[in-house]
Length: 307
Image: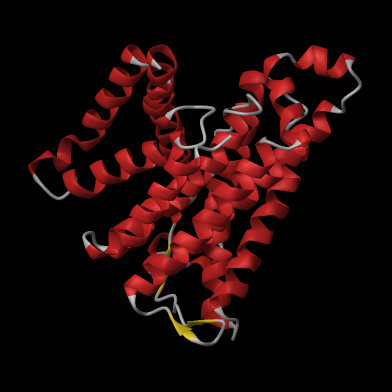
């Protein structure tokens, strides 16, 4: 279970962070941390690799953005609608993908994500390559003005905490124990009478919904929804975040997202900007060779061996 002292410390840091760091950067970090945590639910706790999770991130962003631009919905309702759209897309794609295993599952999800990318590229409501710009933030519940970046950050923090709690509750429930059993020995889980495809599909839908929640929130933070969020590069980035942070750990995606987003933010604008992807690749190689469990996974091993 979660170390409560660590959780309280992290929450305190999250509440005080806007006093020292630009709130929009922090909000971006939390959006990607939620996205990585959603992906980690599949890879780390079910043992299946999706190469198409950007489809759900982008869908949440586009649906939320379109509703904010073309309806009178308040932000929370638009985000919920974007989350439901991502969950619905995940339900359809999951039904097609879970019938396959291993690399075939990964390739099916990649193909479906690329199909989604080209649909959004051609669809008139997305703005094509220009993206969906000028998305208004409006007022939360019609009362709290989100135009203030600090207020927007605290909304993102609340959404991240909800997503983190849901993932923690899922993996520590009887349902989550079955998912771990499938990860460890799928044939044995089948022999015990579990409908493995159904469990995989449900996990896929939950993961897709949380990814869409991250995408919808991100579109409000930047007041923009673009093709970048649907591109296969984004699916690759979330894999990098998860592997560097620690697959199968609760806090690994947060650590991985923090590292990758910080590198992108502070290195892209300087002389090292042209070498950003090389640096990120080097960090990934070092992590794989030096501590294959990721940052958080290696810290957990160190703690177990020394205390």
